[in-house]
Image (cartoon, rainbow, N blue to C red; front, side):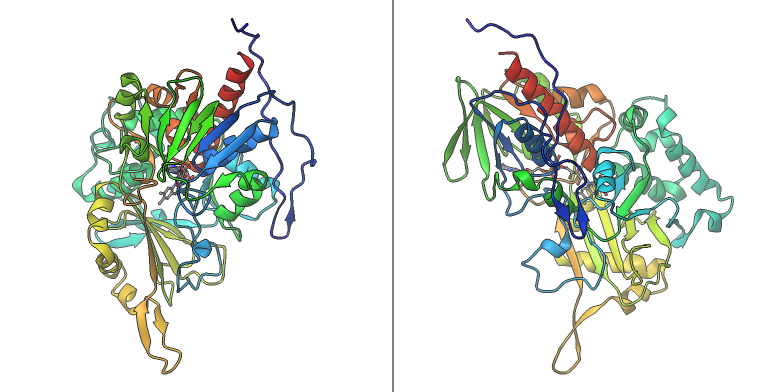
Length: 480
Ligand SMILES: Cc1cc2nc3c(=O)[nH]c(=O)nc-3n(C[C@H](O)[C@H](O)[C@H](O)COP(=O)(O)OP(=O)(O)OC[C@H]3O[C@@H](n4cnc5c(N)ncnc54)[C@H](O)[C@@H]3O)c2cc1C
């Protein structure tokens, strides 16, 4: 019989990433913390932020790790346009343009601290950018709208979410704003959290905001693509990632766990950490044997993960205003972002983020989606969008060709099946905990959707979940 050792808590040591352009990582080289004796391998499914960080922590403890990643690159939903080598045309932007996560929340959050350690210049979106709000097809700053009661009703609702104590209903029901302010509410209290205001639960978001232990200041990194930042920070385990490895099944019924990929290759592990998105798991992307317990599935079903689109559009002129940050309130594009604000002299790239039913509708339009978005921008900005969209120039005769824009359809991508997880009306943070609960001390779950520290749906949530799951794995090793 195996004797259970006393459960020892071990501090989560981190290995030091080496460098990002021009910046030397300042930690001491060898401070991996105490070793955890383990003769088996921990296999991590997914090389997004959660998978990379969990692997990094375990590796720093001397544990053998392998990371299986389905796609052809690391980073997951952190994906920078510049790194997409298959693109024939690139944006004219001289600042990082992101296809997934683009804003870091919290200067003292886990991701905020990574950025600080590298001494990278941050653009504080609360002081260096001015948000615009669209009502009646007009975009103006808060000051510009003056005492508009509809705008103020939305802002008051959103700002007071941390103290929300009403029913566990949708944002739309909880806010009860006028029809004129509906799209604005949908942008700020629905789309921002991963879907539409009639799908996102007010209590879930409020509980997350109450739980947060860091400041929630939004910022961008001036010159470094976030995907490069992850590669640098986790460079010690990047060599452990096996790209193009699509895991299809995990059999944890025996002593050893058997993981099978799309090609039928099998790999054995002592423990597995699953970091694939909720969308992938709910879509049956990985078959578990034995099947996932019904309580876990019931909780997963109370968490949403909807269609998601990022559209990047290059213009010849910034017609939306130099210091604009977010432009909230569009019905087609609920979240336009002036991606270059305070990062560059050239503020000519708009990043559009659409989650939920609207993303599904626009995804179905295929490439015609650009016309739908330009039509909305034309209506708000006096037809300037169609006029100033940048086009390819024919080298020979100088004539203009195709319009320059990019699309990432996260909902359609089988390795993501959505944008970000959110608690539906009626759900609670307990559902995230149930979703993240380990199976038989063998299969562990991480990823933004499992975070219970107030950061679910974000990069910080993914990183927090990695710290939690690494500790769980270490505890489980030390207890046997
Ligand atoms: C459009 C968009 C905008 C966003 N904006 C922000 C933002 O501004 N700020 C912010 O903080 N967050 C933002 N987010 C959310 C943030 O990107 C995610 O929360 C975070 O990156 C999730 O990391 P993760 O490791 O949990 O999951 P993922 O990044 O999804 O990583 C999971 C990995 O698993 C892999 N995988 C999937 N299936 C398999 C399989 N069968 N076998 C092997 N591997 C598999 C995937 O390829 C992926 O690499 C945004 C997300 C989207 C889509």
